[in-house]
Structures are given as structure tokens and as C-alpha cells.
Image 1 (cartoon, rainbow over the protein chains, first blue to last red):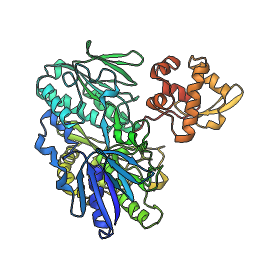
Image 2: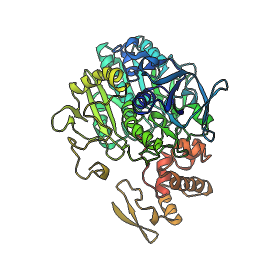
Image 3: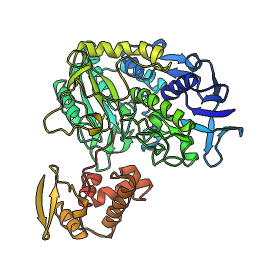
Length: 421
Length: 104
């Protein structure tokens, strides 16, 4: 028997296991999926939990429930990968050999990377919403909030779901209005970027929306420390932003196991061929989802599109054929903008988000880079799709891994990617 | 895009004032670009610029702050002292590389 090992049973790892169990000859291959945690979280829900839009039951399921027959699932912690010996060592010393390894160990907020972040204000006045416990603690903090200075902040890029802090700002604005606190609250959005978002056209649209909602934006802010006594964040060039409630996005890093294995970059992300998803250092190690260093968004939609590509490439690799399926960096992100409306972004490595209709050109029903109720409904409907279609490794009708140019309005002068034509 | 003559050499600058063709770059041009930013290049500056150049060859992008710290061994505080108000952007400009797009 040959061994396909998949590390991490999050969005990417679960989809990969479910796709490969249908494609591989299971009389010749054993598929083993490893994860240290028992729970699968619907992570987009972490954004909604603090505002009471979702409850715990909406976003937590047992991981095992989504892993189909033919996959051996082990709830174990991985100590390190020995890439020269094709083995994975577990905490405690046991080891598992592999012929092909898929690394899907994701990224996690690492507040310890910023001086003072886990100080006396942590989980009291300083919060994050990228973990289950963080999101719940923030819900309590918001419920006790009486107005004041609400600061939404990003430590450094890249972060998982780069639109999420913007969504948090929009939802906070709406939530504060509903609760009669908006006039008593100054909202500030603090980012290390030079604008509201990473991509110029979308940045302009979203920047305008922040302005409309009276959310002050502080750009080019590189945090040096959190001052827990004076309740302020301080940048390396001594800019200061005081807070009564700080909602930060801590530095995102890959799994510490990657560092122990000597396979990561300075943020523990694995250097990966952005088109084939093969690791740059080892031919039989592939990387998917947030764990890669690929220059696209760290997001569930990306993991899903990558899984389609990686399944084809794993099958090719196993048969000794060239890796011909190429990932274009396609990301598809809903942005909640508050008051039951939302935006939709669709982009890839070469084309930034533009306006248009999606998924049917000219018709939609969703609008790209434009605010609509239907986009919001799309985002809300997505939870069902995630649990029932996406994690099973089934395709989403009309939305393939290759980004489509059809239906997109390309502004004059914008370079159209050759590969997409 | 516009052409500009620096120290007798014609260089092409993008809309954002960053050089678009690194082959036009040399150390004298770096010194001239630096002085436009009010910076006189010292050995400490060159350590940063050389790291960017070597890393760009390897990675194809201008290294971020954390990479400068961890791989280049240059502390953030020092970077801000050498290149005030946005060290990565300023250093990239002087090193003759495109404006760093901070990821996605």
C-alpha cells in the first residue's frame, strides 16, 4: 500500500481528502488525514458571532462528520515533517511514512508577536475575532460596550480573509446604530497598508464606503506595541491611536510545526509553486490553503479552487506525468457592508477586483464590487453550501477554479491577464 | 511613465516615482534618489539596499519588514531610523525596485 498523508482537517484538508478518496484506487492507496483538534469551525461565522447574527450552533461541527468513507482520520498532533526521510513524526514519537504529503495546516493569529498585545488588556479591551474563543469574548465585550473609541486594526499582512476587518467595521457601524451607541462612538480603522484594501480599484470603493459611514482611516501604521496602561497602540514611528475597545487582527503565521520541520519562510508559510501547488523544496510535498506562500488571499474560496487544481496534479504526479493543471490565484469573497447589504469580489493573481455581474455575465444575479442585498443573501446562503457542498469536495455549479473574465467590466488602461483571455 | 535624467543617465519612472527598469539602476542613481528623500546613504543604508537586491533576485518581490528582521537581521527600529516614514517603500524606491505591493 502507498500512503497519501494530509496534514490538517480544515477547509482545504477536508476537501482534499474527500476529493482524493473518490479519485484514488483505494486498493493501492491509503489516505490518512491528521488534525489535532476535534472541531470544524465555519470561520466566516466568527465575524457574525460578536454581533449576535450567528450563534455557536451555526459555526461548530465535529470534524469527523465531514470525512467520507475511505479516509482514515486520526486526531493527533504532528511534531514535525522529516522531508528527507518521507516521514511525519507525531507528538510522542510515533511516525507515519508517506509517499505523497499534502500540507494543509493553515494559519493562526499569533498575538504574542506584538509587544504588549497579550498584556492586561487582552480579552478585556483588546480583542480578535479569528478564533472561536476570541469571537465569543468579543461578543461579551460588545454587549458591555457603552460607546467611546472603537479601533479596528491590522498588525501586518498577509492575513486570513483580508476583507474581514473591513466587514467588521461596517457591521460594527450598523450594530452601534441599532443599539443607540453610534453617536457615542468614534470608529477608527488602522491599517499597515496605504489604503483601505490591498487592491487599488476595490480600495477606492471601500475607502469611500468607510468615509460615508464616518469611519476614520489611519494608513501606513506599523504597530510596535500595545500600551496596556494608557490603552493605546503605538507605531514604530511613534504614531499613537488610543482605544476603549481594540479589535485587532494579530500577525498571521503558519503552523509552528512548519518551522520545526525547517520548511517555512519567515512567517512559517511553505514556499510553494503558485500554479502547481507543489512545494518548492520537495517534489512529493504539496501545499494548499492558508499554509502556502502563494500571493493570493488566504480564504476558503481559494482553498476550494486550489483543491480542484491539486486533485488533478496529485493524480498526475502519482502517474509520473507533468503537473499540467495551473492555479490562477482565483478568489471569490463576499463583503458584508452592514444593514443587510454586501459586496462581492472576484479576482486572481493577475486581475484585481472590478465591477460586473456574477456568475452569469450581464445577468448576475450577484453584482461585483457593488453593494446589493443579493450579495448579502449570497453570503448568508453560503453557510449551507459550505457544510453541504464545499466540504464534501463537490463542485459549485458555474464557479470553477479558473477565474472568468466574462461579465467583468475592465477599466480602460487596466492590463488584462494573458492567461485569462 | 516618464523619463528622468539622473547624473547623466536616463531612467524610466512609473507613475508612483519608482523605477520600472532595474537594469538602469546603479549606485550613483541610488545616492541621487536617496538625496531626493533627504537621505545620505551610509554603510548601514547599503546593508539594507543590498539585502533587498539579493532577496529580490531570489524571491522576485521586495522583502517585507518581518523578512528584513528575520532573514536580513535588520531590526525594525533601525529601519525606521535609516529610512523614516515608511522604510520599506523608501528603501525599495532607492534600491530601484517597484513599489512594494503589500500582499493580498
